[in-house]
Image (cartoon, rainbow, N blue to C red; front, side, top):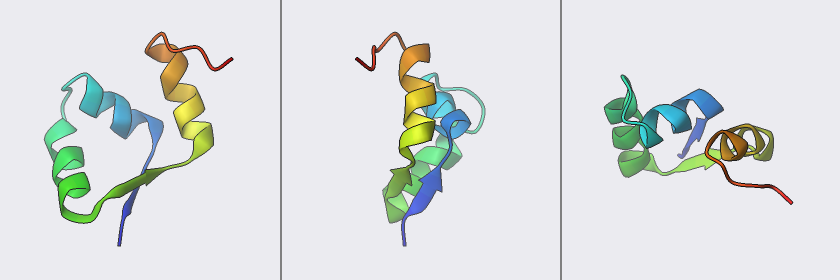
Length: 51
């Protein structure tokens, strides 16, 4: 069963913040999904345009 990530988990992983290892381990063990609304929150924070 895959885990479902929220925006803060993905940002922690990308920025190697506290908790990033837990997120990475969960993805490695079970795979992961992220809702489009959470991805839409993350991408602009990383400088990626949505249009």
